[in-house]
Image 1 (cartoon, rainbow, N blue to C red):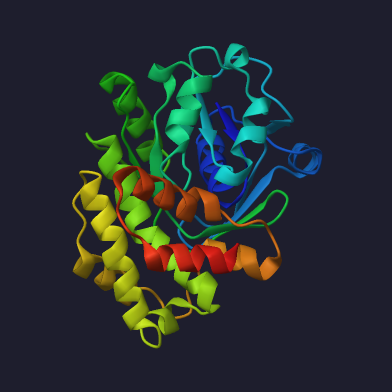
Image 2: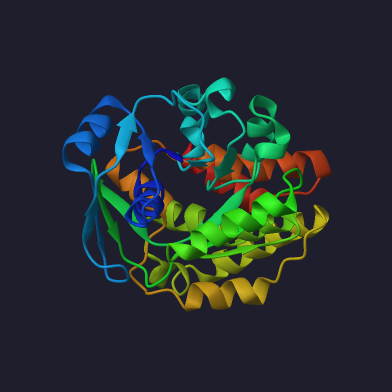
Length: 289
C-alpha cells in the first residue's frame, strides 16, 4: 500500500500499517524520501508508544498497490496526485482523508470512480520534521463512505484499519459524512485563524460570532440536504482543551499556505449554487485572503 503525503495523518496511519507487517511505500518530496529511506518513520504517541518502522519511500508510485491513502492538504492535491498515475495505481483503492467536500469529484475525474473511498479522520497528529510524527490525541478515528465503491471493498478497508489500532467504521451516506466533518471544522478553522485565538477564547470571548457562524453554515448544510445541529456543534467546541488550535491557524502562524479555498471557498461556491446568503463566512474569508 502507499501513502501520498506522509505528514501528521499519513505518517501516523502508514506507520501503524507498517508496524503491523504491511508493506508501505511513503510518497513525498526528495527530503522526505531520503529521510524515510535512511531512518524510517518515527512515531511518538501516548496511545501507541514510541516506535520506528522501516518502510519504503519514493517520489512517485511505480507499481500497483491495493490501497493508496491520500493525506496531503487539498490546496496541493492537484500537484500531489501527479505522483500516483492511474496506470501505476492499478486496481487499488484511493482513500482521501482530506478536509473539504469537493475533492472526491476531482479524484473520480482522475481515477476510476469505483476505486475512490472518501474518509474523514479525527486525530491530533503533526509532523514535526521529515519522518517524525507526534500523535497527541488518545484516539485515531476514521469514518469511510463511498457512493461508488463496492461495500465489500469498503468492509475490507475498515477491517484492515481496525486491525492496526485505528477506530474505523463504514457509513452509508458519503455526502452526510463529508458535510458532517465540514460543519464542525469550518467554524473552528475560520474563526480561530481570523481572531488568532485558541478554542478557549473562540468559545468565550468570540462566542456570539461563533454561534452566528455555526448557524449560518448549518443553514447551508440543511439546504444541501444534510441535517446540522447547532447545539451539538457548540457542545463539541466546549469539550475541546482550551489551548487547542485549528490546523489552519497553525499554518497561518507558521506562514504556510492555508486550506482556505478547500474549507471556506467550498462553502461559498455551494452557497452561490443554492442562493443561500453567507455574509459572515464571506467576511471572514475576505479578511483572511
